Every structure is written in structure tokens, then in C-alpha cells.
Length: 167
Image (cartoon, rainbow, N blue to C red; front, side):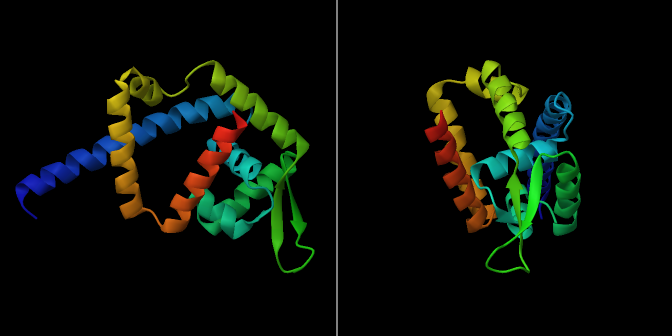
């Protein structure tokens, strides 16, 4: 790898990590207002859009490993935000469902998010000209399709469409 590539890699990796960490910190702050972690908040949004999934499916949607997902789910069950139930067709499978309390929490968070833009990154994005926003989204999607698996990208498309219908 030549020096130019090393510098480009350095900048790219550190900028992306910095942007993600900035959003993650802000997400943590917002989640803690509801006595949740950002992972709990993420689970509520995932299950709200696609309730009754298997633990492995939830792990794939949340980009967590299976043991982390298991721990998150168990903590959320204790809080009454989600429930675990055996699949009626295959008792070996446990499905995860959002509870009424979980739906209420998710809806309160959505209402809060609609009132103001939470993430500084999104505020900066919305300050950009519309054509620049579209170009940036196009570039990010192009990179995502190259890096992320097709199943995850399909989930992103479907869940985005569901959110559009909900609005």
C-alpha cells in the first residue's frame, strides 16, 4: 500500500468512526432519558417494524452477535418491554415480541424525535443543499451495497418504506 492510500485509509476510517461515535453518544443520551440503552431503543424500533422475529434475526438486524442479543433481550424482558414466546409451529424456536409497554416507549421516543433533530450529524446534513443531500445519500448507499450483506440492505429498504407509510 502506498503512502497516499495509507493517508486516505487513515482519514476515511477515523472520520467514519468519529461520526459514528458522535451519533452513538447522542443516541445514548436520548435513550437514557427513557431509562434505556441505545441497544434497547434499537430493539424497540426493530420489533415495532418487524415483530415476532427469532433471536438470530434480531441479532442480524441490530448488527450484534448472538450472545449480546440474548443479554439485551433478557434485560428488556425483565423491564416488560418485550416478551419471548415459543413458536407454535416449532417449539425449538423462540420468537421475540414487543409488548404494549414497549410500543408506548417507542412511540414516545418517535414523538420526541419528531419535535427536534437529535443528532448533530443529521442537523448538519439538513443544512446542505437538497442536491448535495441526494448525492451524499447515493454515495453512502453505493458504499453500503458493496460492504453490507444483501439481506441487511433489503431490511433497510423494507423498514424505510414502512416508516414512510407510518408518517
